[in-house]
Amino acid sequence: MAAFRDMEEVSQGLVSLLGANRAEAQQRRLLGRHEQIVERLLETQDGAEQRLREVLAAEEEVAQRLLDAKEQACLGSTELQQLEAQLQKAGEEDSRLKASLLQLTRELEACKEVEADLETREREVDEDTTVTIPSAVYVAQLYHRVSKIEWDYECEPGVIRGIHHGPRVAQPIHLDSSQLSKKFISDYLWSLVDVEW
Image (cartoon, rainbow, N blue to C red; front, side, top):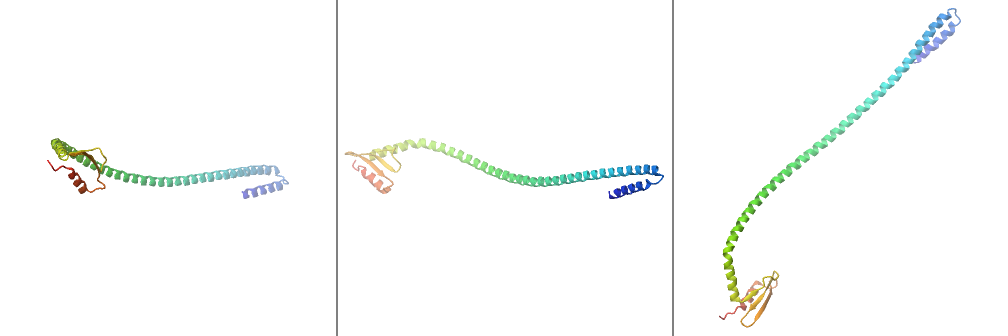
């Protein structure tokens, strides 16, 4: 750009020198043409500089976009790794839950077998009970006739309560099995039984 300015100064110097010369008209015309060329050259240079600035700005923008794209790709890769890790954990949890479900299914089947066995035994006990109930009632009636004790079956647990209908007078029975020994209770109850027939 400085060279063009120097050319312009030389051209102006030539114009002033040629002003005194007789071929002044032709030289002015040539110099005028030369000035037009220089002006066009300067305009072209200005346009080229403007385009160069635009190209540099476009390159900078493309470079920034490329950096942004690389950053996005890096973030996407990190997110993908996190998702893969979560997927792996979910797979492990799924396997653990399936194993647990299988174990629970086996336990349920075992419980069903035990339940069926218990139902079978209950039926057997029910059948046996129907046979033994009359003998149990008979034993209770026999014991009542021998001991003459009428038991209170609705008393609290651990309390032995009833009425002994002895030969002379009825006598209440109230014993606490948590404070008395089984031997004492047995001896006491047998002492109530009348030995005279």
